[in-house]
Image (cartoon, rainbow, N blue to C red):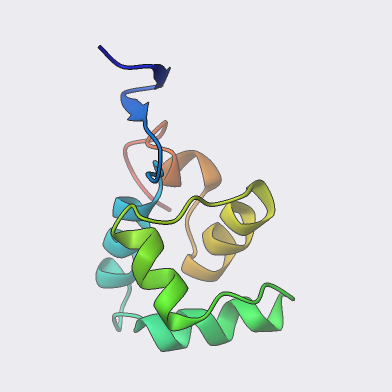
Length: 91
């Protein structure tokens, strides 16, 4: 049983719902965006996420706060809704 259902995901300790979508958005970008490049894009927005932190987010081992989700969406050129799996197609 899922302790905290959110949309089609289940929040558990040490997991997040956007990590898989962050990885997918990076890989679908033309050209693909490396984790280090994403970290640099976030830095320009005042978000200090390192490459190892991004790797943990993508692996579901680090939670993501609201301002980070918004910055990730902007840096990846997708919507916040898409990162949360609410929207099936990214922009």
